[in-house]
Length: 177
Image (tube, rainbow, N blue to C red; front, side, top):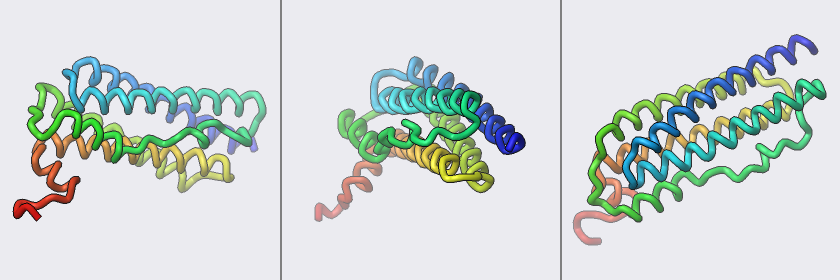
């Protein structure tokens, strides 16, 4: 049991460090991004990552106090961000004529890399998970990180080709049909 607890504690500590790195990055990205869809998406992800950090801290504290996973963790009940809807709303608000701001492209690349690393981290830990509560936690985190990754990929496409983004997402064609 002690070995399992150490593995879980180590995983949670690593997750906390990763979330802190993501928080720092998305905070800076939002601060440095001019108003527009980029700023909105960076702020939405920042809010989610803040919730992740808090929940990981709560789980870790519960494990230290009680020696096992909480039976009902609020993280599992937390509403998952609707990545497609969130980004589509921001994109519509600013329209297809947006220009990429200096630094947004680089921030997107870094953010996409961070979210990919987080997805890989949680997927690997899910393969090693022991027990339903741990698996549920890891599945939820993996799902959230995939949503963030998808939002950043959509934002990258939107900035690279706004008209193409709207044509694809709104299922319109060039022939007017």
